[in-house]
Length: 303
Image (cartoon, rainbow, N blue to C red; front, side):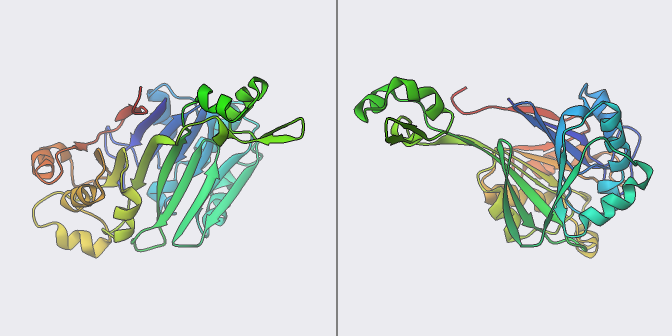
């Protein structure tokens, strides 16, 4: 199961019932957090999640509404007896900011491993994901992320037999290993069919619309994108503050051919974003005006 949950959907400042920006994904026992605004660990507990299993944290940028929850979360992870390292990925300067925040969360019982991004696009293999980072257009360096779960081809016994692959090798080859037996090397492609369609989640906040976002989101099963403003006439304000409107996010989702769009990161002035749902769905019908706790379990096509 590839679980996705929006823990907080507010930008700039929290509102009653709306925590600051954060999203959690879970797959094969691995927890991955994108951003960690104030209230993230409270939101985790409300949804019944444990912070103990979070092993990777993606930081879009180091504005306070995206990282202010980190010290408390990391301290709670330590109090939950986590000892395994936690990887934190973000723009250049992320480590210095997080280390400074952790002055109030000293002596963590696990290592923080940092990977700082410097290129416009970077691809990182991380557990069962490929993380594709792409730079967006905010007023400081900011990245969006695509999480890609690839899926190998089906096991084909007839192909294994045709390639004279011993049955003793089948199990390891299905797990992606290369096996050498009696001086012969066997590879997974000798028993597997073509790669099947996997799953893709793209997440982007705090940006103006850019071709890089459309390119990154192309073919995503789920595109989570900021919709800072929705009111008529808010385009000028969005441009001035380097943010997006509902209509701009929906237009990108349409251009990218995503299956579904979740809007998030609402301005505190946008108290009732759902009232603009019909307007945005006239651009992209598969739009969800998200709220805190928005959840989906993405499944592979054959399931």
